[in-house]
Amino acid sequence: MNLYFWILRLAALFGHRKAKKLVLGQGQAMEALQAWRATTMDAPIVWIHVASVGEFEQARPIIERLHQELPFRKILLTFFSPSGYEVRKDYPLVDKVLYLPFATRRNAKKWLATLQPEMAIMVKYEFWPAYLKALKQNSVPTYLISAIFRPGQLFFLPWGVGYRRLLHCFQHIYVQDQASKELLQRYGVESASVAGDTRFDRVFEIKRAAKELPLVAAFVEGAEQVLVAGSTWPEEEEMLARYMQEHPGVRLILAPHEIHAQHMHQLFQYFEGRYVRYTEASMLNIQKCRILVVDTIGLLSSIYRYGHVAYIGGGFGVGIHNTLEAAVYGMPVVFGPNWKKFREARGLIEAGASISVKNYRELAAALDRAFATQQQMGQAAADYVQSELGATERIYSEIF
Image (tube, rainbow, N blue to C red; front, side, top):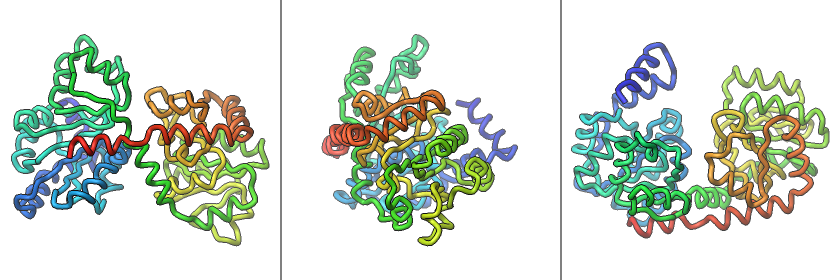
């Protein structure tokens, strides 16, 4: 932990943008907590900690239910990631959003002495030893939700005994699947149950509240094959450009993961003038192009509804992005090879709703197959999502 701290400080010193934001945010968090806590009087506080945006989406159904049904409780939401904090720092359904200070024993002790939470909820992979030990020492009920465990994780390695003890700091662990529960039990962790993944409930709510997007509707009007490619990276965008050249009957809605100017310039070189940017689109020009590039954030989850097949980016890098936002609309989902750490991706493949690809040849064949079997694969996707609903209710009813 100390080595990580100094690496982070060094990166910030040399101008790394995210590291600078993280160091600054962590440095200001304690003072901000003290100022906020002085205004909350004796109200009970629920502390919810997430790593970034993805884990926030898993916590969100619990937060929304808590805000609606127990409004007298105050909710503190903390982030580790600058990207998560920056996107959700003004989230209206919690009372305060902060970075979590670096996990030292001193910080943890001071944080809990100031906060004095009624309970703490961690999401998926958040295991900060100093904070978990302090919560246990202060007898604060602490829960882990939407967790998933695999044999190769540090907890279950011969030298991971100390880390494994952290699992006993939780009053209860709500895991996504039976395999995780059985793994925990083999190592003496009995306070665990299978609740599922709250993201399924979240994407179902997103679908119900999806925005009407007239420009996108105009773009797809009359098209028989619409591909929505979400959260894509350069290697994938280059392959998609080739696919579009070889398939003139397909229309593409492309929502890249990065939308800064440098990446946009690189992206547009792939497509050579055959595109329109969402921020520059109008009812007059949008139907003249085959490719709509979404160069703004916050629309992707609503855009999937306008497609016939989805490609989810990230699989040729560190890991795929959110497949469920597309699958909930009952559409086939295609993604790259790095998906094995994602339970929902495995579930979609086993259901016959998704295809994983390792190169362009496989990508082209998978997209062709998905368009040809859209109805069957799409129904399999919708059925899979439906079968996984209910985690929020199971967790909330037990904790609160």
